[in-house]
Length: 349
Image 1 (cartoon, one colour):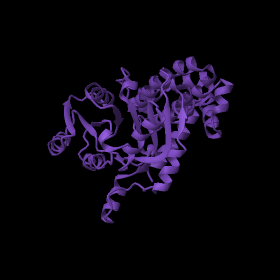
Image 2 (tube, one colour):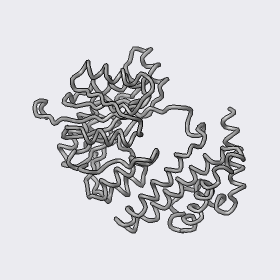
Image 3 (cartoon, rainbow, N blue to C red):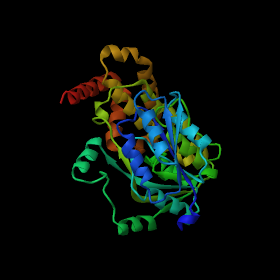
Image 4 (tube, one colour):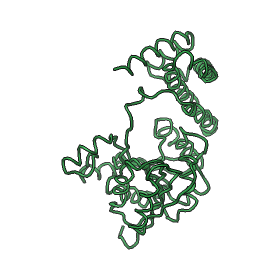
């Protein structure tokens, strides 16, 4: 598409205490080959220098708007961006992530050529240390560049999915992220992110779009850089918000089954996996802490005993999770002790 005819893309960036990463994130956004953008930095009550950094970018580039609000969470920040954005297309970027220079160009182009409501790409993972290493080598990004030939092959192999197909091949196959996608503004309409959830709000947002019959274009092009913070999932202790993994899938289940009863087994299997992930976190607590979180443990056990008894859902699990579900379902205390021992041993390495 000729630059003069390009539609405006609204880039919504929720920011909370992002002073370490925000500048490099913004450099990747401002360096897009698709220049017709408005960039909304939604400062969600940060207590570090994030507000100053947002204001500085706003002064330097007329496409950037800094919006400051009380801390209400990432969903509220994204929803505020949706309320005030003016672009024809919308994309979401987390403040510690990166974009390949042509990501917006390729995804906006997919919207134009396919007529779909949503266009998405794949992503690459990186750690902050990777970025520092690349800078020391004189490079600007840790993302592995794809050749133009590779990109074009990915774009030619773009998959077009109906809303129902995206439920099965996307949402139930771990494509539950709102970032790495571009949306038509009119297709989003009044759909908003569920507030009060720390996990799963992306998935429910996409599910709302899918159940409305929106069409999705998916490319294998790796245009989004996802920052991995911390030492991996095994290193993080349980937080109350982890229960949202179960809550969000309990909310999704009736929607998925209503759209297609044939999705019930797959949806129940995902819920089982979510429950077992939470159980693993609970197992890492001390005995006293687990007693304080007994209601959470009982909730997980109810989910596992109910859906683990469904043969169809059980068959959808891989071998490892089948074993975990069986042991926890019939011997929960033994499972918690064994898993807790493994967790503590791992943390001491």
